[in-house]
Length: 169
Image (tube, rainbow, N blue to C red; front, side):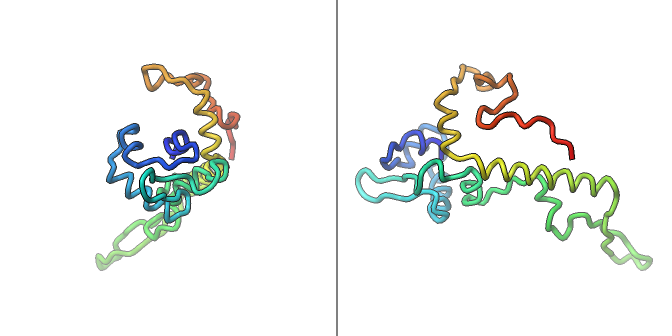
């Protein structure tokens, strides 16, 4: 999505170009862009000079919108929320039959609460960060030959939002 944002300038971008620049399989990109088009994040343009463009302004498309379209669930609590097996321990009764016992330990509940809160913070951050935010940040980032040496990386700030510091629950 950032490649499309950087290289479009209002003109369609072909998936083959994105594939080459980003070293991503064309087949995989086709699958992703089909989902993005269905989710109304991108529009396809047919014919000579065709390709894909953003369906709305880069400042109106959040990172959460993109992740939702492609079906990515990055919620750290996804394995303990709304899953029947979550917090359930399989035990045996006197006859050897499986029975489900709810795990209700202090540790389980603290862990669950922590990851629920972390998921809420992450979703809020993703919902309020747009392609435009990242695009403007990308215009100011200079990469050295080593990927880990991103300008500003040592300061522990994203440059997109101010550091929110430690959050105590």
